[in-house]
Image (cartoon, rainbow, N blue to C red; front, side, top):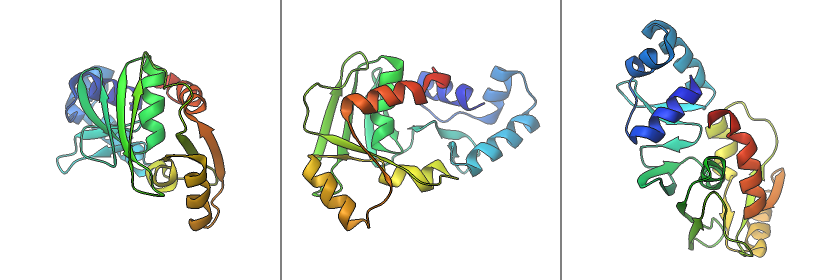
Length: 183
């Protein structure tokens, strides 16, 4: 269900009604509604007031903190890691616009055929620790920083949360694994 929602969002860049998913996966709307409810509770998807899926697997068609131009369409992502990992897994060109949480500076990352720029001073943070809801527990801290010094300052200010620093290349490699089941 998550893959069907992700694939449909990617294809149409618009909210996906449960009825469309039911047709696509060959289940009743009741079965789809039950599964969508479970996925929403874990933070794997988001739905709008009408019940349509507006985000799946980190790819959103409604405004969020990180803007992603992908395949000629404008999307948003739940976290900066999504903005690197999704184009990497899909091997697509993309542009991610986000902000460094340490200084507020805008960051623009151009991804070519799924590969982020080599030698960039931008560094990412992959949160660790328990994660019962990806949107609540992981995404708020999965960010990009202008430099390693900004990441270190942020981490100290944030109370030294568990996780791992990662280069853009490492984020792309991890993203290929994380989104492999959705591509």
